[in-house]
Structure formats: structure tokens, C-alpha cells
Amino acid sequence: MRAALVVVAAMVMGCRSTEAAATTTKAPEREWSCGAVHGEARLARALGRGGRLKLGVVADTNGTAPATMANLSKLARVFSEEHVDAVLALGDLGANEDEIAAVLTALGKDAKAPVLALAGEREPENAFHAAVKRVHDAGGDVVDLVDTRLVDTGVIDIVSVPGYPFSRKGCHYSASDLDGVARRVAGRTHPRVVAAHTPPRGDGAG
Image (cartoon, rainbow, N blue to C red):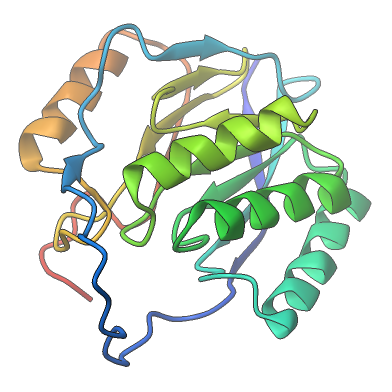
């Protein structure tokens, strides 16, 4: 049976701030190359019906300002009305654990669908993983696409490339990390969707 992919909506909730960061005495978190593939990093999760997979997509919420959360809720309700099979949250969700957890919780609650979340350039390593765990432990249906790099839906493979290659602020990946992703999916026959914060073949910071 031929697989079909439907993307219901792709919406950028905000843009990267050009304002200088406030001075702080707290030491910055260490750089991390979250693009590296560790272990099997594969999840079998049945999604879609009749060879059809419908995904909602959102990125760049950049925190939990009231206007942002109101827009996010409206978008998530569209996903619910369209009966998406899952929501891809493609990074720059927030700068700390509380912000990331709030965004993931709101998405899952209003969209009424699993949330597949990866980190962008904004999320610190510990904060991202802690936020996903917090939401999961509270009963949210959320998948960490930094730890899980291949979701086998039975219809289409969702392959994640978290991070941003041109920044050291948060999640970072290198060219060799992309080689690891390619090895992880080699030989698989399902149609493939690459979920990324930035185009993996991009040639410069945009």
C-alpha cells in the first residue's frame, strides 16, 4: 500500500530575538552535540490509518508569553479539528525547563495527539530532557526526538535531526552527526520524513 503524508499546518510562532542577553552570574551550560545518534535510538509507534499519516507542525514558540500561548492554543485546536495523528514540535520551544514543559503540555492537551519534540538552538540539554520527562511523568504523550532518532510509524519513518549547526547556545550538531543519522536509516524501505529545526543541507546561518 502506498503511504501518504499530510501536513496540516506549519506555523512559526515567533522569530529569534536580536536583543542582547541579560548579564548573569550563572555559568552557561556546556555545549552539547545533540545531533549524535546513541545506541538503537529507534521507537516503533503505530501512527496513521489506512496508509495515511497526518502531522501537525509547529516551531519557534520561544517561550510562554501570553500572546504566544494564546496562538499556540488556537493552532493546537486546529490540529485537533483536523484529527492529526501526531504533532511535530520542531525546536526553539523555550529557554528553560518550565517554558519547554508548558509548551509541550499545552500542545498535547489542546491537540489531543502525541507530541514528538526535538530541541533547536535555544534549548539547553538538561532543561530539554527534564521538561520532556516532566510532561511524560504527568501523563502527557510526548516523545523525546533527541534520544529517539527514528520513529517507525508502520506507515512512514520519522527521522529526527535536532539542533542547529551554527550556534553553541543550546542543541548543536555537526556534519559527522548527520552521517550517523544516515547510517541509522540505511536499508529501510518506508517513505521518510526528516523532522529538523533547520534544513540539514543548509549552507549557512539564516
